[in-house]
Image (tube, rainbow, N blue to C red):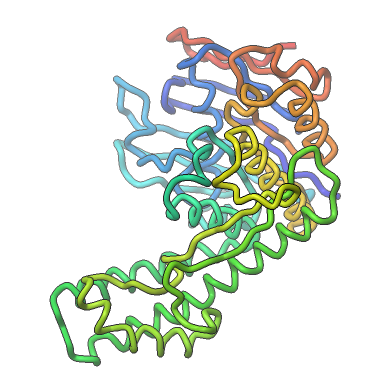
Length: 370
């Protein structure tokens, strides 16, 4: 199997890092240091080398180092499927993020064609007990990892829906105003549903095919208010939008469609809904899904993705930590992991590179250590 990894990563005026440069060799990367030193900032820098807004969903302005506020830049050398790429991402004075691949300007979606990045951060720990929006975002990140064009379908759908919602709020009753918008929503919405369903099937197959130290989750795609009997059929979805227009007008917004979907999960071994599991079990299910996503991508894309696991070791007992490290190294993934103490990663031994991050205001506060 081919490899996917960063061989060099440079941060300039990014968050807390005035300048940091890491030379990497493809092994997992254990990043340790005190809270507030900037460990997660390194993971965020890697996350913006993929389509989307990054693991914090932050604006370009928020990523710039203070007090200089000059803008920021992240550069990386990426080896992917036996090819080498130079990636640049930057923002000047808070302007929108720009991207270059191999010296040429590129759209963000192009990053998904040459690499794959998955992440798990502490903010996701409440995924199963909070609102559906976070679970949709989690599912769409997984879907995007398999199908980079999924992002375009989502953007098309959301743009058309915003326009439709504006008409609904203004109580516009002329059907001609809705026709083109609902056609766009139906075409994009059906594609979104198909992409999500395909992603769930890949995750299920990856979990079923592998013995893991983490519990398997049975996943399903549900809708609070089903749009129609065939949500993957554009014509059926179009008819549903038209039929529901009167109810939507009363509410002032679109009440049916893929934006109302939810991700359900069952702890398979116990036949218990994820929302009713203990905090530790919920975390284990999340890790299981990230690992399943990574295994599925290794087959689908041809190389395991880059993994970003923020503070993951601190919430696992020693046996689970060892199991996680074994699965990551067996997969051959370059995983960037953070923790406050180096000893959290002792089971990795020589299988990993180690980066110490301090909170001193120096030229570089992230250094590779033996």
